[in-house]
Image (cartoon, rainbow, N blue to C red; front, side):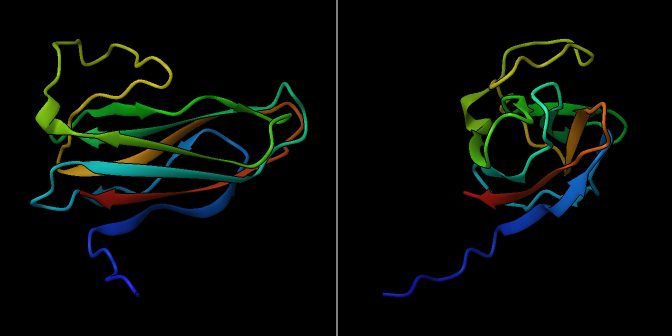
Length: 139
């Protein structure tokens, strides 16, 4: 039986090769959701074990500061194509933290601001690239 398309699903980052550190375009956070699922699809990896990419999801809470809310495991060039899924659920609450404090790997902050974006840090000595996409689904 066919399902109904999720109207709260959208692309946070279209599939694209990244050779340098950067951020994606901001996307408005859907209204009336209980949480957000983020799906990182890493489809093409750089070639060396010393090549790495660290992908994060950020939200805008105060109109000025982007805050990391999801930090996926770092991926290196020796890994194979992979998919990671994480979920942010504001109803679970959030402990106090300093805005400038770093977010540990595979940890999430249960916060959703007015906008979301992807951010990535690439360490690559030979200009190889990482190709990935990120989908977000409101729940």
